Image 1: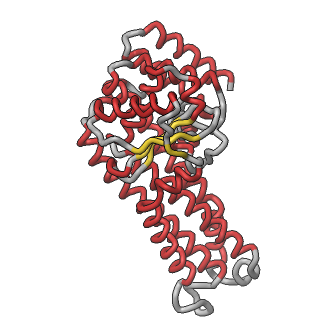
Image 2: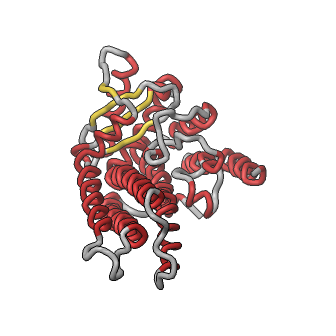
Length: 338
């Protein structure tokens, strides 16, 4: 059960150290996926590890080289790739909404003690935002025009504070790595499936190792799902933490709660988002029903906590238990309706 005390118990230094370790573990997990995919193709397609196979595991070496390239790209170019994928554009200070956004980001950078990040907008009616970058020096915040239109200044400030919290907690590196590496797993899995489907039948009949082809094939098919579940598990708790950290910056939990309510009621999906980048955003851009649920299944399949639960916690922080209780009842009704 998520509580306010559990969210704010760690200081910034602890969070950054913890996120550094998490980043390393995530990279290792994805490298393991790449390696296992290569081994599976070697076993099924090349008859590797038998007297009939090649002396070296060709597909595994290709997969490892590919994974090294993807990891390097994720760290050095991940932010640019993500911003390009949503058609992010630089602010035009001549536009009043852009100028106000720049001022808000400047205020929140000062409040958080972070460097001023680069600020972008993307032209889309869906109200949303995200932060990216491998570290504070390279950080960037991107906001949709839909969010600037829908929210007032204080509410926009709450959203920006949430994104600054991701930068301050060093979440952006973790989430950026996940986005690029997840895409790499999907590409490699697709390559493995095409290689096998376009090849001779799965291993020769009578092979003593034929049964091992079944789990190898299964791994190839489900590896994108498993890696996506890993990404979702990492992402959910970070949203609670970023909400709580944003309140530390603004001292105004109601502004963030109101922003979440407006975004929830707008219910507009962000067309440029994908399942590989959904975890980056302030609220889930895909707008699926599973995102309104809680529990272990939702934790595995959704990149964000239920939006009503986030709002409820913010009302508790604001000292409004009545509002929080009302949302709790609504959340129970949503769970029961499914």
